[in-house]
Amino acid sequence: MDKYEHGGNIYVYDENVIDFSSNINPLGFPECIRDSIDIAALTKYPDINYTQLKRSISRYGGLKNENIIVGNGASELIYLFVRAFSLKKPLIPSPAFLEYERAVTLSGGNPLYYRILEEDGYMIDVDKIVNRFKEVDSVIIGNPNNPTGKGIKRKDVEYIVKEAKNLDLPVMIDEAFIEFIYDYKEYQSLDLINDYDNLFVIRAATKFFGLPGLRLGYGFGSENLIKRLEDYKEPWTVNAFADAAGRRIFDDVKFMEDTRKYIKEEIAYLRSELRKIDELVVFDTLVNYMLLKLKHWNVNDLKEELLKRGILIRDASNFRYLDDRCFRIAVKSHDDNVKLIEAIKEILK
Image (cartoon, rainbow, N blue to C red; front, side, top):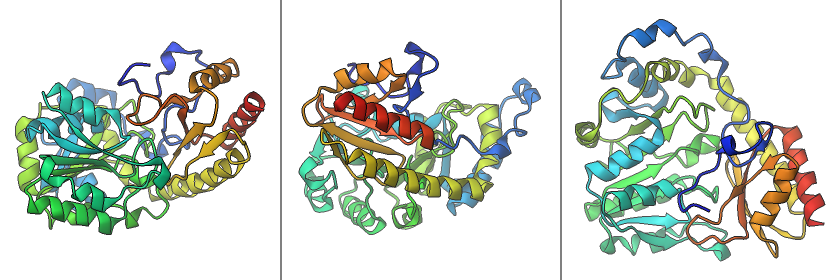
């Protein structure tokens, strides 16, 4: 498996495969954007300052336009943050989203890692992270973390950011999945932006709003931090369609509430049913995906057997500190979730 391979690469498989490797909102995207796309918009450049888009994000996040930057998905903003601050030795709690490491190594850096332990249920020990701060030049954390689905409560995030500020360390918190958490307000860190000028928070329309093809990411930080990022950013990286959709999606409160309710119910169902399979170790999660571990099987063998049944899972063996018994599944429709469970039971019996 390639070192930086992701889930969701369905193009090399049969088009009818049920894709449990990609953790996108199973309810689809907000219906409000269906009439937001105007083909004529392609004849003009997008607003280089994305004023209306930022205004929409501002209402949603409770911060000013000057505290917001937009990009071509969260991935652009991850790479931008690394480049703008010339990060060479960030601390990355791992296993973690692979693009954190890749962004640093491509910029000539060498990340340091805090190993999140399986025996701790993949929960992060914030004291152990803070104790490593004198070794590094920055901190990059996924909250919730991918692939473990674990979150850090807001008070612990503030502790991390405050201790980092004392050492003048910039901190990036990737909240790409945070809106999936049923009680997400206990975890989000946007209200820390005004108090900590070393904090950069990233989100995206990709996962929660079910729009990976639009490539719309957005980030929050102090005015000075955002200005620094803008100085390193290429112009017009958000296209006209993403700009238009982004002006609408943040007003669809019902879609957001329906999503959180559905994810909470289906995660409970998947967890209960999968734990009936002796061969599986099932880790708790807060979001729309779940990390699992095989006790004796190799994940590639399970993956091949599931593909014969039209189901694709995410081989998680290329995440740092995970091995070839680990895989990740996403929450899909209830009927598809039932198919996955029955297929795994049949294979592992």
